[in-house]
Image (cartoon, rainbow, N blue to C red; front, side, top):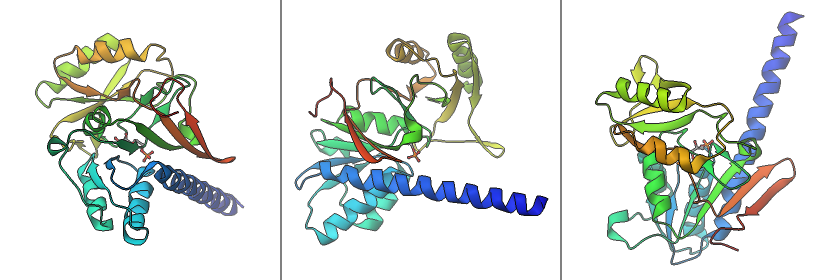
Length: 250
Ligand code: 5RP
């Protein structure tokens, strides 16, 4: 009986993983409608935007789409090359037309938490250089207040424990060094990630971003304020597009 019960539980959780994967794929592919030939496109990082990258590769191969991409991580660079997206260095171009990226949370003001995949520094540089930012997500990412997802903060390896203590004092919450087994997770930039367990209480993300960036050992924080123009969200109602009324795409 117990065995049947646990098998049923396993089957249910496998089903819900499949459902989430389907939603991610739907959102990732739907966002490609914003990409036109001739564009310079920032390519985000994560399990949702990976579907965007694969679809853009298909559009290049089958629909004569002509774009160049700038990846936000080594993982995305590898995938983009595999699917045939020509890449350029961000330093060699004068800005990007658009970036499509995932998010860990977004709030009603289109403020984001990113960095669950430890790519926040490159993601933020690419977003900052883009004329528009499209976020792809499944509906678990929509929140009333940011912060249930631990806030990722990229920090220098030098004195990282001291920086983590400073962050804990500033934010008045538990801050952990992100680990993979016994080793600290290292970013593509050779830095570490501190995760701040703020609780779902970030009501003033702009002030928080500034205060965190004031700590010398902090390289970047995963609060993406006033950057997101559109969220392409997949949920039980299908794919919906939410346009930021204060954004650059109307
Ligand atoms: C990586 C990120 C990702 O975009 C974010 O974690 C969402 O990833 P996923 O689509 O896998 O949920 O910020 O640093």
